[in-house]
Image (tube, rainbow, N blue to C red; front, side):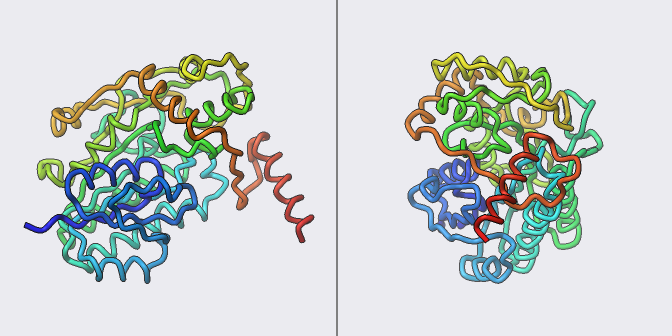
Length: 347
């Protein structure tokens, strides 16, 4: 029997590269696609065929589907800066919604796709719903969550009309090796580690008492990779990640211990965000119980810290295309002003 052929989008990014690695270990032929806007070419696992490009490039996407007749599609490409998404609405919907629809269109037209695996987000739930359970009515509070939920609904419609099988995962607060520690808008554990190596205070939005269940990558990626092997998971939405929530301040202290530093915490303006976000994993336990692991926060951050020290500190990136500055948080407003000044000087 020939090896399954799988497309993994976002394969030079964090979760995508780990899912691609799991698929290579399973014997899949993997086409790894990424536009390198937030990932690194060196993240792509050995054995993958790498294709640089965007999911918004319909011509490229359609060509790949014709060339490879994919059995499985793992769609992990996204710009997951949830807090920034209200201020980059066009960019958010173009990348996180329209790019996804380009893939759904191609999968339906190809007729060969046996399962479309999509990584959504706990951002679809909104606030006041802990523990978040799959049967709850989604009420996303930001454009990122809205885009993710829209793709979920589109996949359900594509299945109803054309029979496209799918599995939707809602991972949350995933961290680990290969995370982009240079991104100042997302990946809080990576941000803290980079700040520690740069000798900077750890920047906390608000009082730091927000709670999240931080999920180590090995608790998440192998389950996503295994989804097509579990027909009972088809047409299901599944929370995946760690069980125990921690405050941001508790997590910051864990990062300090792992990095061997004692740096101050700098409290910034509070963002408009869900205060408490953690989920039930009863569905995941039922469907993937044999694959579930539960790496402790101390152990997972320790592993990531060893990797971070190896790759070293990085200059934080700056998003250059802020679309709405009205109401932009003060710490990002200063960056936007600096970017405008730099552009005028360059011009």
